[in-house]
Image (cartoon, rainbow, N blue to C red; front, side):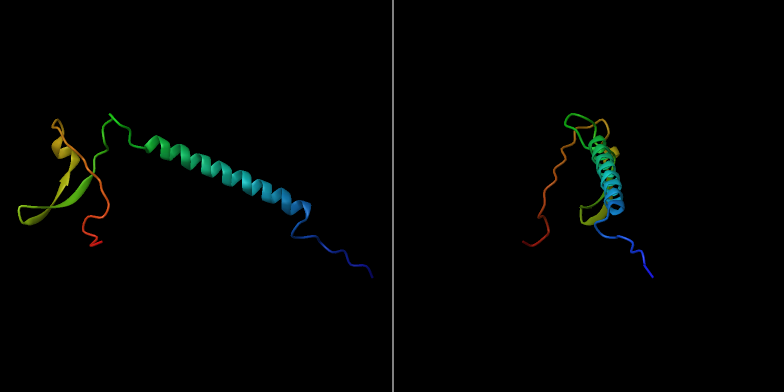
Length: 85
């Protein structure tokens, strides 16, 4: 009796499936990069509205960027504040 063994691992079917998977992954990565680029903040363009917790005059409250619409606002982002480093 002769038993036919099915190839697995490095067989041609597996390679063609790997190519499909690699192509799909590449398409997903390109889609993510395109989306991130579209959502990226740009110099001179309006910032998206956001709300943040703040400590002001001895109490915690929240502030929205839209609260300052029509006014000059300087936004500074820096790491390390309150990290005790």
